[in-house]
Image (cartoon, rainbow, N blue to C red; front, side):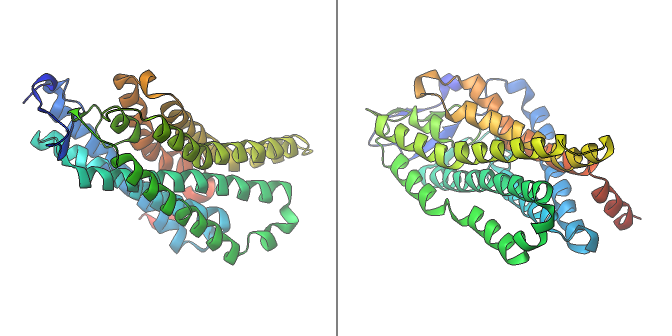
Length: 312
């Protein structure tokens, strides 16, 4: 296996591909990492697939909350399938090259799905806000048509913006090294390889991050501030505990996902550390999607009941 310093460096005119260094700095652990990440990928596919299945077949789970959860699980499957299969192939074959078009396509879908996930998490928080703070109006406000519109909006809103963002990023001139010190094509890492001033591109990226990460995160905080205020006013400890239980799983996922994402994207190019970026990227591309079905099943009695019905 070639080490990082032996990978080719190219000039501006011959740059036709990038090299995803990934975990090339620990060559003795390649097959071990392959096994770990393959296991994680299987857990993500099976866990989120199980959530989609039980919310479709169990009538007790055919409510707005579980409709959003099923869509979130499907989104997680798509999200991880953008990065993990390529990483597994690189670990298995030790061939780390990726064409510019393939890199741009991966980045574009990663940004679209990541933005959709942020918006959908905000929609799920709004659903809990209506259910807890306005329970009498919940069936009217969160009717089937509104639920479909909210999910469709989460999926579609970012498509033209992220396509434009990707086009602008790969319109930059690249020279010198073509080594991406990560296991997938991410925007901050690509910026580091660009020649000249990337200030305008970075500012554009920050604006997009504000729209698709910060704004949904603030909406989630507002929703939960109202939710917590309402729950604390409930008369009995049992009712408070039950209300908190419907929100705790979502809060855990929000904390993990937004915490790692904001840390990664809200820092200038010069402040990015390869090791820290790789660790944070593992969090929001593998760890959070893997724990999502665990969090939502083990902490949800309705889902556990549905699983017992489904499994022999």
